[in-house]
Image (cartoon, rainbow, N blue to C red; front, side):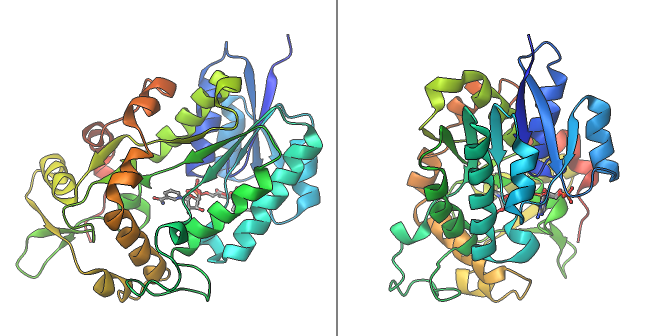
Length: 313
Ligand SMILES: NC(=O)c1ccc[n+]([C@@H]2O[C@H](COP(=O)([O-])OP(=O)(O)OC[C@H]3O[C@@H](n4cnc5c(N)ncnc54)[C@H](OP(=O)(O)O)[C@@H]3O)[C@@H](O)[C@H]2O)c1
């Protein structure tokens, strides 16, 4: 019997890459991965083709391109790329193009990688954090939540993702050596727990969700490998790196002022994660995540496999 095609946006990236690799590693499975990329000739795209994925040229900024790439797909994995352009409106347009392509293809199951609307927790007139770009508290969350509406008439599973451990490698969040020579891990989370996950496990969880199928359509599910405090993360980092790592939790205002691109958005995000930690964690069950991805990693396991890639700043 012909395999069911899953069209995967962001296939050469973290979330989509994990999904393509999960599908390809299950050779006897019911699905065939179709990897969407702007450049089928890139090294990453060729690596996915070598695993058995069908690699298709696609630009999610162009609806006609996504429509062509999703033709004949049973499933569609939708993820958008806020950090490539920092534009909530462009992210929403990307989501709308993916939803429109899934609709045109008659997709039977869509997974939309989304996040909460922080404004439902902290209204725009709440002075505890600045309003950004005129109408957002956490732009990269709020934009995705608004884009949920694009998927409302589709057979969609809304997937709430978590902070990637890979941010320690790719997002400049590795411990840094302070003036006293000690390693310091900076995270403005106070004593609150933050749901977190290996980026690769997001795609693996998505694969499990496609396998479960109908029972998760129309549902909002959240995933995490663990819920840890900054102090717990620092202790685990210290054990993996073989050296004490001191936890430093700056104020949210200080973090927003760090000056890197997106610092205000990320500062607001951590404040939102901190102030509503209980609800934020409750929405991301480790048990559920394990049930759809039995290989779900803990932070210790991820650190053991990846510590050599963490570059101390
Ligand atoms: N970092 C975190 O902790 C975290 C946590 C939760 C959610 N998120 C969300 O994750 C999203 C990003 O997902 P990711 O981390 O999987 O992305 P990623 O690793 O940065 O990869 C994105 C991939 O998407 C492709 N891409 C970018 N623009 C495209 C376009 N116009 N058309 C087609 N493909 C395009 C690129 O592939 P090609 O160059 O091959 O086309 C790239 O490899 C963000 O919106 C972010 O808010 C991040």
